[in-house]
Structures are given as structure tokens and as C-alpha cells.
Image (cartoon, rainbow, N blue to C red; front, side, top):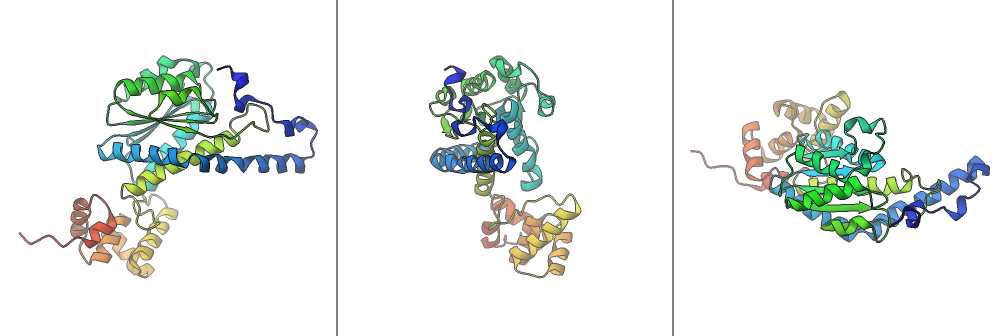
Amino acid sequence: MDLKSLTTETAHPGSVDLDRMPVADLLALMNAEDRRAPDAVAAALPQVAAAVELIVAARTRGGRLIYLGAGTSGRLGLLDAVECPPTFDTDPGEVVGLIAGGERAFTVAVEGAEDDPALAAEDLRALALGSDDVVVGLTASGRTPYVLGGLDHARSVGAATVSVACNVGAVISAHADVAIELDTGPEVLTGSTRLKAGTAQKLVCNMLSTASMVRGGKVFGNLMVDVRPTNAKLVDRARRIVATAAGTDADTAAAALAAADGQAKVAVVMLLAGCSREGALDRLARAGGRVRAAVAAPAPSPS
């Protein structure tokens, strides 16, 4: 498929005079076009849901979620990956972002890296990719060689695969177990897929990580009970999370959080189940980390 035939490379008929538009009109056009991003994601929700199920299954097996992309798409995958440890207390190795050209490509473009399909296979081999993992390939065009090569390698070792593209009938869709196609249309600035195509990909990444972590017991109600309180803001947030989850006051929540060694989830179980830190840890271990199940579980019989 030629680049010129891709919707993401097509000139937008409403922006042909972009360089002559008053700023207010230019921004209004961009804002109107940006609204297509959530609509495109909404149309693909069944495929996003199928991808979440693959990720949940992989994580249940001890596998990893690995994002793979080039340029803006690769940066979006990396961004989602690095946000998981502070939000969900995951190990940095549980959600990984790979970008063509390596981590330095996050800040400085590495020319030509995205054109090498073998490079992605090398990057995945370096991670010891296995059949328990799931690889999500992000590419606005839907034809980036680096991402195609990575998904093909992933399938060759039995890993689950997901593709995310911003063109309908994308080449990459045939290279994945679940194909997510986001019809975002032409960009206001022709070919600049960091705009609404990037926004749509970010929305999907948000959904994949958040929904899979919710299903994996990392959330209680709508509270991030596995948050890592690594700065003053997060310490305050953890205290408020414990207070809200346990229906108690700030001072009681703070005391429980201190007794729980800063672990909000443990503090919540301590307060709701009326148990010690050790008892809460035991309950959570038996409940697979899920707060509701930990609180509902009977206390272990004394030995």
C-alpha cells in the first residue's frame, strides 16, 4: 500500500489555506478535528475489549505487556509503560515500551530506524520475549516495517499480538491476533500523525493499561489503591484514597497508612477487615491482590 493512498497522508480539504487562516479559525478547525479521535476509538471498542482480554490473560500467566512503535507511536507506548509503576505499583518489567532506535529516540529522532523490520525482532529477543507475553504494535500508518517485523517475530514465538493503526484496512491488521483500526481521517497538517491520530492511539493505550490493571485487582472501586506514594502529592493522595475506601477520617487513614508501611491497599484491608498488617498481607495474597475478595475472606484459622 502506497503512502499516498493512506487516509493519514491525505490532505484535509478544510485546511488547504491553513497558512492564511486567522489563529482563532485555525484553532477552531483543529479542535473540531480532534473530536474525531474519541469517536474513532468508540467505533473500535469491541476490538479494544478483545485486546484487554489478551493482556489480562497474559498477565495472569506472568507475562508482560509490551508496546512497540516508532516515532510518535513509540513515544506514546513508552509514556504509557512508564506511568504504570507509580499508578499501579507494577514492576518496570511488567509493562515495557520499545521504540525504534532505542530509548534515545524518545527525545531525538533516529533516522531510518523505523524502516528496519529486523530491528524490532532484535529488540524483542533482548527482552527474551516468550509465549506468555502480549505485544501491542502501534503505528498510525499501519505499515511501519519496524512494527510489522516485531509483530511477526512475536507471533513466531507464540506471543499474543495486537495492532493499533489509524487507517482502515491497514497492512498491519493481518499481522495481529486483534486488529484495532482507528478511522481518524486526514490531519489538519497533512501527514502530521502526532495530532489526532496520536491522540486516538493515546486513548487506546490508556484503555489497554487501565482496564487490564482494573481487571487484575489493582483498583478498588475507582481508587488506585496500589499507588506508590513517592512524593508529597502522592502521599496526600494515598491518605485520601485510604480514607475514602475505608470510610474513615484523615487521621485514622494516615495512621493506618503508616502502619501499612505506606501501602494504601494494605491499609484499606487493615481498616475494612479489622486486621493487622500481616493479616492484611495474608488476605491479599490469598485473594490475588483484590481488595474486595481480601476483605470478604474469612480470617485464617490459628495454627
